[in-house]
Length: 345
Image (tube, rainbow, N blue to C red):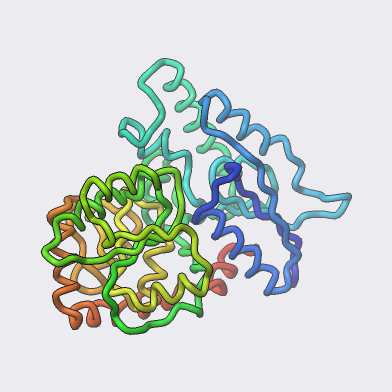
């Protein structure tokens, strides 16, 4: 029976990444199955930290049970702090919590300092998450990695539920070409500097195509120049969907080695296109799909180790073909039908 469903998400203005693609895909899938769906997105900012709690409170104050006097059957909440919203039939599909206060806390990726003020705000976030996430009628996470973090920091259990790529059904396998593909947002957590340093250490003059945008682009281009990679590196920015699909289809392999990734659409897209994935041993959710020597190659997050794996795949196309062939089966069960059976009450 069709339902009236509101998807709740937080949106940093001018920023777009995997969470936004997930929401778009969920909306489209629900509509395809006959549900009346809309997305409620509230802006938020993580600086100054004093604004984090009011951002969650804004969700708490919304009335999402009725719209113009007509009941809303359920809400589906995604990333922080949208799951603070109230509804008697609230389902959470957790993209991530505020990572700077959780697993990134105490690392260079966090903007939280060891000060009384930041510690107090972090404690508030922990209490808020425990309260608001425990209200969910069903609690899912987009990966085992995200579910594990939730259990570790908040003590709640979530069932992993993998989101399909927006390109599901469109990705295809082509010839194993002469370039490495990187499809990642250009920011520090994706560790594309590690890839550039690995390319500088390969025996073979491997070429790499970078697609995607981000605030780190200028720094990465300077690093590529400093490493004298020259024409071996190409930053294309965002590309049209057809071009992206073609780039996956003809790559020799895909590099995706972020630090402790939540999930990573790049991984499932690469495997669906029968491309082996080169990743790192601390890449988080990526490792739920990439098994060393089966669907890709896993190395310590070290330029020399990664360079050796890149050389191995470019030395031997049959190795790339063998690893790539195992990819489509590994992600074949990730579907919107499965997601909707879980999320719709």
